[in-house]
Structures are given as C-alpha cells and as structure tokens.
Image (spheres, rainbow, N blue to C red):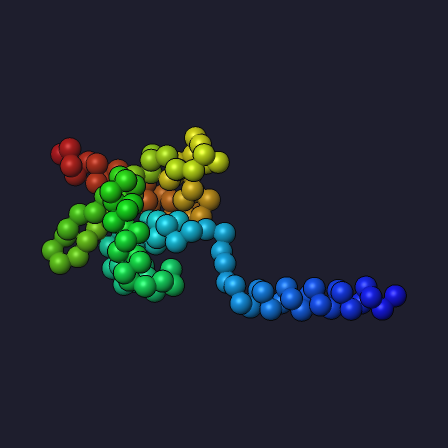
Length: 130
C-alpha cells in the first residue's frame, strides 16, 4: 500500500524538521544554573551564561530570583561573588512535592560532585559559627 509509505515518509520528515527547528531539554535554565553553581560556587555569571547557553542578563535574572527565594545565598568576596546553595529548600511545583534542591542535584551531579557540595556547605556553616 503506497499510502502508508507516503505518510510515514511525511511524518518522519516532519519530525526531523521539527527536531531541527526546536531545540529543547528536559531541565529548565533554573536547574542548569543550580548545576553550574553547585559545581563551581565561584563561577562568574558570564561563565554560567556560556555553559547554560543563554544571555548573561537572563542568568542575572535567574540568580536574582533564586537568591530572593532563598535557594541561593550570594556572598561578595572581594570583586567576585561566591554562591552557596540551600539544599534543603523544597522544589516549587506540586509534582515535585516533598523533594528538595538536594534531591534534584543528586540526580544531576556525580557522587563526588555532590560530596564536594556538602563539604563546602559544612565548611561554610563551621566558619559562620566558629
């Protein structure tokens, strides 16, 4: 039957074109920013923008929102910023109920990266109480 060959060719052609036209990922830019800050808490926002693939202005907005919500703590160190993540903060969507920033990052970072994040947070807590 020639119709099935024609329709499958059209469908696969349409899918190929759609895939080429629309680049998408499973995670939001907010999650990508969290991954960048978890991996390198001293990264510049320009560096985050390059890794995420959006403008530096967009990263400034995302970091400002994450800071305002308490997910990110920004500290000035000389001319640079240092970012600490609040791992116990809950994720915000109802489908993510009961999950935290730590849960999200645990699925995205290697064990050694996650261990370094926890160690930096413990060290920062010791420094602030000591």
